Every structure is written in structure tokens, then in C-alpha cells.
Image 1 (cartoon, rainbow, N blue to C red):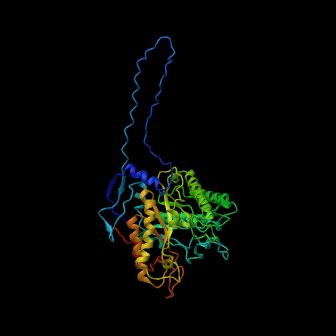
Image 2 (spheres, rainbow, N blue to C red):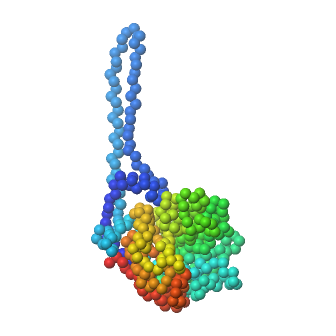
Image 3 (cartoon, rainbow, N blue to C red):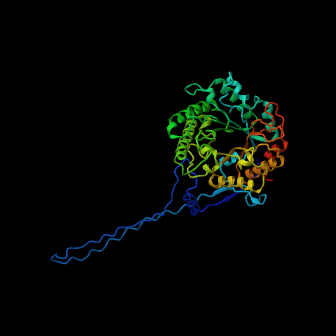
Length: 454
């Protein structure tokens, strides 16, 4: 979304700072927090007891003056916490636009307008019927990515392209990536960058015990896969501009278990997975930074368990340590409520209840991260076509409003599946024809790319 920016400086008191740090909800980031305690000085009083059996009384000597205590240093004024926003002057459907921290990270994401996923293209996986690995790109979505498609995105007002990539079908036994496959991914990435788009690449459908599996039993292999893949990608894209963002992993979870899509902070198995994921996030950051060049301070995205918002705002999630200052973006996905957004047998209406659930997601992310200076991106969202065009428009408009209200960019999922059946179609997230660039759902595209803060 496009935002007008009016600088507002809000000084936070030390008491407020202490309150935030003690809530247990503030994210633990790249450096140790500093706790300022009251400093006091005490003096030890020593009493001399003279020997009263002496033959001649001895008069008490004149007591030496006690040394003047060193003055306590003057407390420094807290650095003002600056916000840049239309807060206090701009409202959106009755809500005041939330303040956002005035730091480089938010200046960066304020440039993001509408976002789109290049879904079901490079992320296609395990297509055993193919003999040529280069056919994976069209195996799920039915089309190779064209410049006409990316040109169309730009014309319609999108300037963020997330490029999910599954690598495991394109590596050898030591996880070395196929040069041909990497070059094709690079070709699409470079074209989007040449159009001045933000581009996000990741590790997508590689959550598997042979590759990336977040538990302690498979941790060594997970860390090896993370480091090997990202070292190759980081060197390959080392000189690309800072509009290229690296995202560690897509929806890391205990695949094939009862806990695959559910997070419980009381489940030891899930907590073990969370610990393994935090270690993988750290290995990802360390690996990318170690390659130098533009990667020394490139923006990096990390997620919580399975990209679930509630798991990410929990105290189990912490930001990895980073040598770059404030260059970590938190990534979540949101298809809410699922019975509306994704369940073919669920509801087709988008009303007050559905709005409340989505607004709660944005609000929780704002409170945990944005208000504390940490940017967040919802890397996937969307709702399938249930022959409910008005409700779908209402959904995408509402998500756009929340994105503007909380300054959380959102990236729609498009898998090039368009519903032409006249009935509910599973996974129908298509908006723009991948091969031709022709817009299929102009009303939905307009809802996604509108400027909601006027």
C-alpha cells in the first residue's frame, strides 16, 4: 500500500520501557537488552573499641571526616521514540491509523504496494512423472512465467513479488543446486528487480525428514540443508539490490503428524520443534551474513512454527541474533477464517465475524512486533472462489484496510487456478493469467492494489 507519512515524535518514558521489557511479550532480538537499575551507594560504619584496661586514659582522637560520596551520574534523558504516521489525523473506517516506528526498516517496507505470490511455479515438487527438471515450473500452474505477466503486475499496481522455490528436486546428494534450475529462478528474479519490484525468494516445499525437518532428531541434517542451500543462494544473488529479500523457510512444521497444522505451547513435541526452528533461523541468518557483499545487511525474513500468527506472537518465538541492525522481518501467513478462505464445504459470506478474526491477527502482530520497531509481512493470504464475488471483494478490501491501518504489507497467493466451473473450486486463487498477463478478476485486483489511506 502507499502511505502518506507525517513525522510524529513520541517520547516514551523509562517506566513505559521497563513495562514493555517486563511483559514477556517483547521480542528478543539481535542484542542483549539493557536493564537500568537504581544505583545506590552504602558506607560501612566501623567502630573502634579502645582497651579500657590501659594505665592512662587515652582521649579519643578527632574523627577523620568521612569522604564525600561521589555524586551519582545525572540520569540521561531517554532517547525519543519516534513515530512516522498519519496517527491522530487520519482514520480508516473509524479507526485511527496506528503509529509506526521511525526507523530504516519501516521506511523500507513503506515502499511496498500490493504484493503477489508466483505460486505453484518454482515451488512445484515431487513431480515424478517429469523427465526434465525444467518442466517443474509449469507442472502445477500450467504455464511458464512470462515477462508479460510481470509487466501486468506492475501496470496493475503491484510492486512486491514473492517467488516460492522448492529446491530438493534440484539438488544432488550433497545438496548442491542444479545450475540450470538456479539460473532460471535467477532470470525471473532479475526481471522483476529490473522493474523496480521488491522480490522475496525462499525455501518452500522442502519440509521433509531428508531435508528440513524441525525437530531435535533431524536437527543436524536440517542445519546442514539450511546452510548449504542458503550459502549457494546468497553467493549467487550477492550483488543484487536490497529489494531482494531472503526468506528462510516456508511453513516449517512436523509434517505427517497430528501437530502438523496446530501449535500448542503445552505440547513438548511442538516445543522441541520450535527450538529446532529457532536454531535453523539462526543458522540461516549467520550463513547469509557470512557471504558478505550486499548480503551483509540484506533484509531477511524468518517465521514461527508453520507461519501461524498465534505461534509467532507467542513467547516461544524470538528473533535470531543479527550483525546487521534491524534487518529482520517477521513473516506469517493468514487464511482466516479457514472455513471462509479455504474450506470448500465451509461458509461463503464475509461479514462482521470474519472481519473481527482477521483484525485480531493484525492487532496481535502490531502489538508484539510493529509497536516495538520490528517489521512484519503477511507473506500469504487469500480466499478461494466460491462463486461469491461480492464477499471476495469485501475480503480483499478489508485485508487492504488492515494492512494500511497496521502498516503490515500483505502478499496475495495466486496459483494460476481460475474458477471457470460455476461451482466451488478448491485452491482457486488465480487472478492474472500467468502466460499472457491478462487480468481475470479485475475487481479483486483493484481491491488489492487500492490506496486505503487517503
